[in-house]
Length: 307
Image (cartoon, rainbow, N blue to C red; front, top):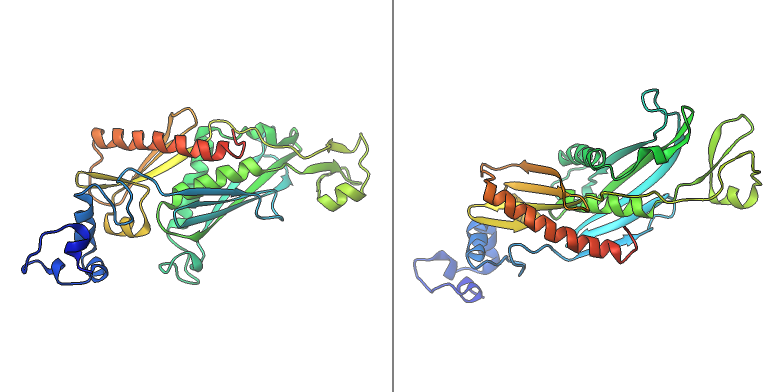
């Protein structure tokens, strides 16, 4: 198959693209290959420039976690799991619990991640996720308080990247939101030493917790508000590409990520890599694409009764 036949290019003995296989041309001249598609407002995977990849979310896949979810955006795959533990609250916030976020990129997720060498993106994404949850107030940390000044919940959110095919932050955030929606706050009670401890499923069935000992008698869900959604775009010349693949990110490296809450208010705007300037027109276009994407994700989560 010749590139000229595949992409509707004119035949020319001077044009190398007419004389080589499409895949070889894509490997040798990736930017030229993509730009020829972009000139026709189409991407090599068949998507229009502003369209995100197909998205799937599944809940409760990790039985040992208190809440979990798997999110797939195209091939990019994230598994999020939450484990709750009782802690002593800080003196600065005696009526609040805490959420700790850790993003992991094991070597299986990408050939660019080497065994024994942590991926550079991992701590950056961990920090950005923590900042988003703090700034959008998705979780009322007071809901995690058990006994003021004495006991509160510490939520450990671990997100594992299973396949890193672009837009990692978007998929990580989506998996985290879904995992929090699946979270069941464990039952806790006073032990013989007067300390609050979590009661696991087997103990719930076999142990008798009387009215005096019980702190909460049954599992409960968190109230989620101002749920954040993210969309990453590539800025390349006059083009804006929504939800890029890893290949697109490696070729056209100016990335813009817009995070909106469920009320379409901007929570975060982040630009990384490249020399392209994000002008007002480009920013507005990215925000509009993010709003459209937010509606799609709300619908996906809404089908699972996630408010």
